[in-house]
Image (cartoon, rainbow, N blue to C red; front, side, top):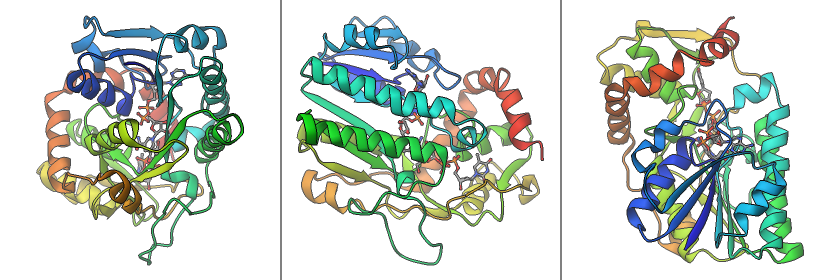
Length: 336
Ligand code: NAD
Ligand code: DAU
């Protein structure tokens, strides 16, 4: 089988490519990635010379390039996106371009070349927020209610993917998952930023009162779910992927990391809140369990500890990132 993976040099995409090459060594993978600030060729250094892996630097909005690649493959696994909420608040334009226009280009090309499966990676953020003091969870029937430019652009892409199935019969599947964490996560997101700031001896910024809750999913659990959906998922279906009771407030996540790293609460700095900050996300993943037999395997505290160790061992990886464009971003984001 031949796969086109978009955004394979980003956090989840590179974890997926490494997993797939290892588990299905006979398959061929083309990774189409623009290498934006978030794309990092270092993530895939170990397989650069694998004869079943090919990297193409390019934009998913480039129709000719996308056509030339899609005509070679059996299926498309679409990770490429602008993915950071705070950046979408500063400038939404790249989010509209990549997440909506880029997805549309991929869909048109997939239809033209009769691709066997188009799998779209999406997020729980498209469903808005849940109240803090409730047990409610998002499920496949929850109405869309995006509350940031990032979430709105992902919601639009989900609608397009679904419509290409309903209107044109394109064989699609969609997965919406909760907050991922693990190795190779760009150090702008809460967990990767916290760990690397501590390693640098810097303060850890918490937005607002830190009581917001996320449903933390270890990246490997996410990848195994995608694998199952690609192998056994039903065409036209959406599957929700979430963690196992890992609904932890931001302040508690940071406290756990500080304690694992032998630091005190003095490292915490409360900073200006994110505009439109979603209070809580939580995923009901009973459908994928019932239909495909998937369930998360990783315990939050153990996976967090593995992640802390990974960042401790891979200082070159994140120091290189933090010394570049990231400095300007950090200054702009946390100046107040
Ligand atoms: P990321 O920001 O780490 O990586 C995105 C990758 O896409 C980068 O390699 C980047 O270079 C590439 N890219 C961006 N624009 C492109 C373009 N126009 N053409 C080609 N490549 C382009 O993102 P991530 O955290 O790995 O997220 C991957 C996918 O998973 C996204 O679709 C995101 O919406 C979704 N998702 C992420 C999370 C999470 O917690 N990280 C949770 C739910 C869903
Ligand atoms: O839920 C899935 C989504 O998870 C994905 O679709 C997004 O691509 C991914 O970025 C992530 O979005 P969040 O906004 O939830 O993740 P982030 O790591 O940016 O923030 C997690 C929580 O931590 C959120 O409540 C905001 C807070 N936060 C974040 C940062 C970066 C802070 O308090 N301080 C910070 O410095």
